[in-house]
Length: 546
Image 1 (cartoon, rainbow, N blue to C red):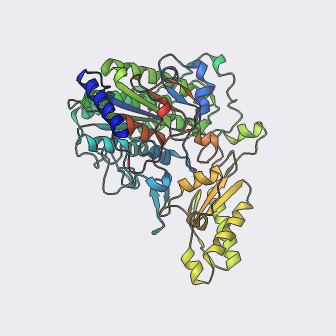
Image 2 (spheres, rainbow, N blue to C red):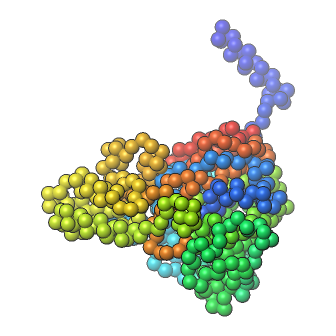
Image 3 (cartoon, rainbow, N blue to C red):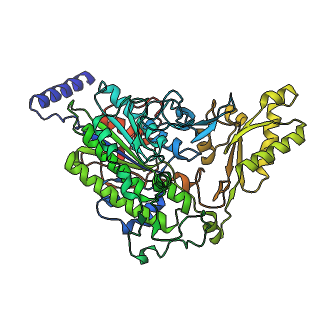
């Protein structure tokens, strides 16, 4: 009976194929556009949604699939683990980017996530520790798989206001361009090439950054639009930082000007302008080989602005509105150049943000900044007093603390006793919520809560510290007295926008299903008919696909 049914099905398929009625494989996009806003919490998109223009974020919300319950699902929510997760589909325990910087466990030297002394910036000053290659990224990206499958004919280009934003999205085989705050140029490194292509050389020669010399940041919306924002007098500001609009940004001094642009909408405008030049110069989305291209644009200014003023500030509010209009203009450009119907758009963020502590305290929440260096020093003194041994704390790069197990064992102190003594001391300190030890992670004793899971994903056996410290909600590590930050496993840091748009591939709608940013790599691999990146752990977001 089964054999008869199989023969019937086979005859039906043969007849359908001969009649030309077999469903065709869905067409692949000509261009995949990956947009990442550095430091954008999901709640800001919702809070300011009514003020959005028609063609940017609103277009994504109305014409795309939007996940309200999407998360960067690892516990140390900073720029580089988040950027690495987007196109690898992997968590830090696999992709190896455990933070913006960390301590080398062998040498004790500080490590920057994308530093590589073998390479330099191309035609730009390069200093020790500058980000020049993806050597520390341990797994491939969607772009790497795209270039592999196309025999290198697909182009993968990334642009960012931060070296780490561009490099980690580019993977091993793409090409990264990043903003240089010493010159105001966008540059690449000798990892990618030995000379700029003609289009990039011509663009750099125009010096577009100079148009912002003496510029001021004006409010985009009428004053009443900002009535619900936090009073600028609520939180202390860094010296020389403006308290309201208009805000002077430009400067007569080059170094001051190019650095100051980072904390303004002008950095993102420059990023979009360079991305336009890359689309035209590289013919992205119009590949003569007929294969898809990938362009990733990481917009860095929102992170700098939120660090300085807080996500509840009028500056953060206004910047998101301006970014929305820039996005609309970029969509219009791509529509004219490639046709938006041929573009698969992904929009997300690397992490969210907590409010400045003064804002949280005004809402009767327990919130504060905690000096990580002082905390580590106090721990070192406590352990020295307890075990009569100096330097049991080797180094710290909070939330990671590195212990000297070898010294302890030589003096008869068991590793477990050292870890437990350190954890008990830290847990007694104001602001500390949880401490995880190497022993807990290695032997499966880290617990089963959601935060336990996120912290396990954030911990890399070879690179991470021997203690991982989690602060209470609305607390964060900072040696300063101003601004805000991120880096926790709490929802305000993990819940980020996740949107996909493309009429041929995406079913529009608001989706309440739980989703993770790592799901993007698996979903893109499915739509591009690629093998998933080696470290990908996410699911295909099938409910949002046509």
